Amino acid sequence: MNSPDNVVERGDPSVLRRMNAARTLKVLYLSRRLTMAQLQAQTSISRRTLELILVELVDLGWVEEVLPVVQGERPVGRPAKSYAFVPSAGCLVAIQLDIENVLVSLTDLTGEQIAETSTALDARLGREARLQVVVDAVDDLLGRAGADRSAVLALTVATPGIVHDDGAVDLPMSIPDWSGFSIATSLETSFATAISVENDAKLAALGELAHLESPVKNFLWLRVDGVRVGMGLVIDGKLYRGHDGSAGEVVWATGLEIHEPVKSHIMGALAKPGTPEHAAALQLADDARAGDPEALAAVRELAVSLVPGLTTLSWIIAPEEIVIGGSLNLIADLLVPAINTELSAGLHSVPTRVVRSRLGERAIVAGATQRSLELLAVHLFGRHRTPSAPGRGGSSASGTQQSQPSLVASGRSA
Image 1 (cartoon, rainbow, N blue to C red):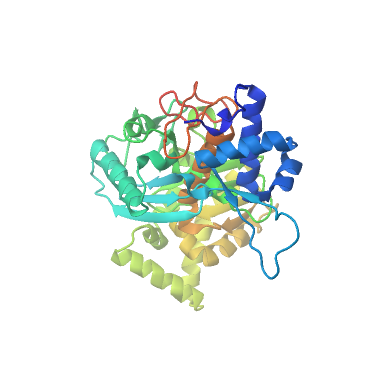
Image 2: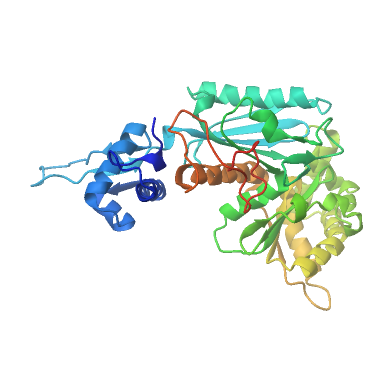
């Protein structure tokens, strides 16, 4: 079966025709639905060539012809046909893997959610068993959607720990056996598709970037909740990975004084749902919102303890924003104003504002979905690949792109 960038006129396998087909599909993907005249205007492709391309794309299942809806009297002349991208031509998978939980989200090819499932994990679970839970969860969602693995056109995993440029995960604590191996290579035996694996905080920053309502080119997303600590950096509008994927691993920056102040504070229990301490932290937050002086003092105490580390990050990186994510986002309405008050109280106010996450606990899975959308764009519109038709799932490639070194899947570029 032909693929979108292989659509050609009979006997004309030119690169130009493949590029025209990819351009046509991209315009329809971005616009969702266009008439022939609109397609011509946006692609600058001749009508005859465009007609041939559309016939092939409709046959392959990427595009559908939409008949006009006529209300009232039928107009004189032939009504204009429209063509639309088919979001259900395949699906995308986003996986948020944590110590005691795995969240799997299934979306269509535009990122609209189809289904989601969350599975509790034993923190002591070994590598193979943990990966099998992931595979089973994806299969369960696909089954509910009436699809199978061949429909998955891109899959992204968010994981704790450093994800090196060669794809190896590095987490010498927290999860048994979760170090020195490639998650992508392990999963490709089950899913013949483009696979990306990235640190969870980095993907959270990517999720925030994709959902900004106003342009912010430089910010960092910070999760520090007494149990986990991580940071994702966006510099000049792009996710910054640093040398060998190590940027943002503030858990090892012991002199930064961010993790311990939260861990030792009562609000650190917000990261421990189901415990008496968690209930006590929520009650303290409610008391603070009600104006209780002791509760407000406890919130200010936490803010003051975070200020030295946040000040250091602010002056070294000078981001426009520091985004508070993780469980502290539950009290961001109290904590963020208190932090900003403290940051502006010095001799020279820091050049950074602290804000709450726009996405809250959804930031990580939103970033994983965004990465899968990026993989899909390469699958559909990349010039150096031959993506398969909907439902076939496989991909061919010549290697990993240098611009996104974390997109590793045993030689498949993403």
